[in-house]
Length: 135
Image (cartoon, rainbow, N blue to C red; front, side, top):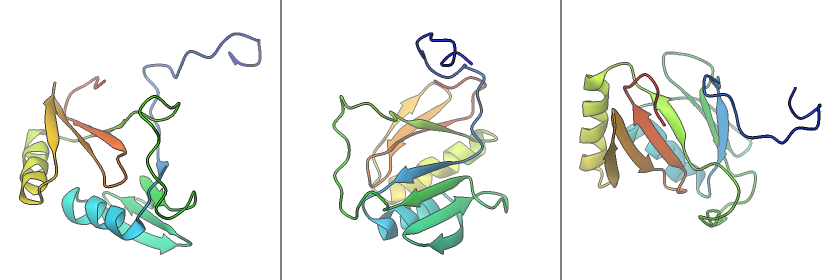
């Protein structure tokens, strides 16, 4: 790969698809509530300071955990790390329903091309998209 031949890493290839990921959150109960009640994921399992969440019966698409510490503050905006991740929605009605749930719960969001951007209670950025190639 690129790192083994000494070249500098410049990021993942644009066509990269990640099957599941884990996020640090500072309040597991608040994050689990947000991702299940508001976003619409199913809670598949809770274990050892983590919640495993999914859609469509999969074992988990997203893990949220407090393994870096309960109550830990979010990373500074200029720190290295994840800026946001993308959740690809199947169609516009799913996005419309999400907007209704966000609004009903007072969750700030902003429109983006083919979708919207919001943050979870731990300030992890999420881009929800119905488009082919979300940024």
